[in-house]
Image (cartoon, rainbow, N blue to C red):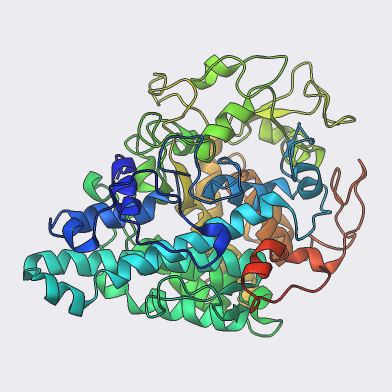
Length: 540
């Protein structure tokens, strides 16, 4: 799946994708449009087509990193993983963006956004576009259509697997919409192409749809086989189970108090833990340019592919690694990129830094990638990139120290889901379930992560020390900048209100309470203007 840029171009080139909203229309850049039947006359076209659905997670347009197939948005703003990072991390205590004059940044990282924020539109648009891509693939691969094309049995078996993958990719997009917006325009392959006034679906129905889809396709998906290079980056049974575990862990957020599914979360986590996945030998191997071959491929349940030559984009790990470079330090070469990176783009807020620096034990933690020398922990001026600590978690170097294929665009795949998260979810679901799983297993799993990071048992905890208060901090130490933090803080009751204020939360440097409506992002006004069936979340 590394080389799927051409496949994305080919599939979008057909001109079949009339998006579900006017602001999602694709712009075809060649007059020579192919008919679907001509394209699919080649049996390999189905592989190319499903690769195009995957590629929407990485790429933004048909002609390089600066183009976008979503109209009205900057290419970087509309990149799937960059948008996910913006909403799930930038709006929390883990990171701050230096250049607040960039459209939408100040409001997002100070929790004062509106329904006209372009960063929010980027996420909503890209996720709904992903649904449209998956739907079109499914339309082109129904039994009736395949009969008309005379597709043979062996090709159909492969297409059946591709169809299951497309349904999981669609469920993933709906999961993100459910988590961040609580509602979405609802379309499947059974709806006509170009249906703009689609009905709206809310969280309870979305939850059921996602769950049913993931369970239904299980038998048609690839088995879990992390050592198989040919299936690396593809959806398999493990990816579907991971999304299930996520929605089960957050069920009380999505469905309301008393509707917990913690026991189900424990059960699915046990399946993943007892499968062929295993922890990478080194924590940081998960975030290097060769994380598809250095052992991390055994831990990464679903990577979003980055390739410095073939999937160039200004999101994914490119912006993360380029943004890690400190303004004064110019330390890009130590990360396998240009010396200045993107000009001191990111730093961490004080509350995140304190998770590592307040206890001396974490000085020996491999997860602690903070650069603190000649820097203050406080950020008194967001625009001054010489203050605040920076991190070096992601790198465009391989495990042997070789730089990636390009000094701007990185080779490091983004680990959207990792086995380490499963370990922590198991522990949390056990504590919340009142019976699912067992405390000794939960403690052992947490200690497995710590032993890897410390190289010994010096930081191991006892079962009495395994509490929810411990886990919310440990999740940040293990999973920071992996697009989980906002969801975690909401589940722990720490995101809104004033029980936990972090730097610049709500605006001021010391942070202030924010209202409950910020647990959800607003549906973009431009999307609602196009589709009048879309409602709006309270407070917007």
